[in-house]
Image 1 (cartoon, one colour):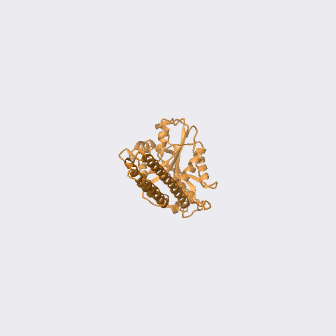
Image 2 (cartoon, rainbow, N blue to C red; image 1 turned 90 degrees about the vertical axis):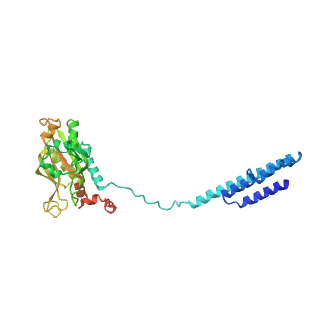
Length: 339
């Protein structure tokens, strides 16, 4: 048995020298030291030995087992080290190479201009108020002095969910909700999406964005309205920007005015862009109708106010000299990367 044990140890060491992966190493461990391994098989024959031989062979068998275990452990550490070294070589990074360019996102032109507009009004002490896009007929029309079958509704044809629920045509509904909840002084703008059943073309869309403003306080006049809008236009288009007010009619303001911006292409001289008028129609505005104030619980004998509504797409197109509204919705990166 001594010769068998020595032979087992020699063969185990020889095979361990040739091992190159963990799987083969485990196979060798099982073959020599497992429950049915060669060393175990020798130990099972100890009963055939004499009392004098058993301690000698037992001690030798334990020594052989110990030597093989140490050799396996040493080989295991060697294979792990080699694996780590190989991985480090394959994953080497050249720190002198330039890094990959990280593309950063940027605001959409509509969001960029909206942020500018909000910044201007926040600087003037206005609050930003939002409201529901799915509105009732009351807040969208009736509270704005447009009862059912009023002809002014025809210009704001929209998408009805049922007879009294619709997608809002303007964010004026937010102004009504605000006046019902707050007492003057009130200074707000209400940006948001609005809907009208318009055909899609270069200047129209069934979905667009509006920014409406409202001021209600004692002694508010048209001069305050004009000064507010002039400041906004100068901040957006530069100090040379000029506006003009033209008489108009809106059911919810009295007096009412259309506000035009001097054409940024011809500077008031007249060109094809402004249809030779020198000015481009920009927004509607006026003094809040006394009936609208009274219906919201505000005494029109004490308070007055002005309101206006600006199309975000329209001022964005003017801000960046864009000639087709559809470009703002198509998500074409060749277009958006210019801003």
